[in-house]
Image 1 (cartoon, one colour):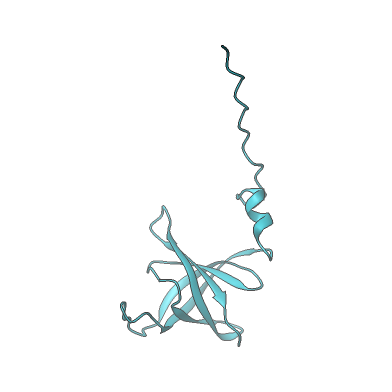
Image 2: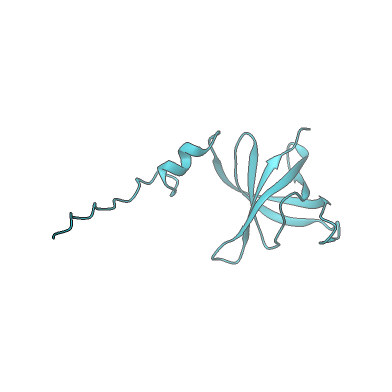
Length: 116
C-alpha cells in the first residue's frame, strides 16, 4: 500500500514591512513605523505589582489609529494604564494589552489609546 505524496508547504508571502501578509490583513488599521523617543509614566497599576510613578523613557516603535507599540526596558502587564508625553500633542493615556520580550532584551508593549 503506497501513501499519497505530502503536499508541499509554501511560506506565506511577506510584505514590505518584514511581516507576513496574512498578519497585516488581520489588522483593522495600517501601522506607521517610527523611532521617536517618548516619556511615559505608570498612571494605574495592578494591586499585586505596585510601581512608582517615576518617568521612564521608551521608543515609539509603531502606531496606528487606535494603538501604539512601545519598545522599552521594563515589562508592563495587561490592563496597566500608562500616560505618554508626546512632544507636539501633549499627554495621552494608554492601556497595556500585551507585552512580549524581544531577542534584543527589550519589551514590545502593545497599547490601546484611551479616549482623551
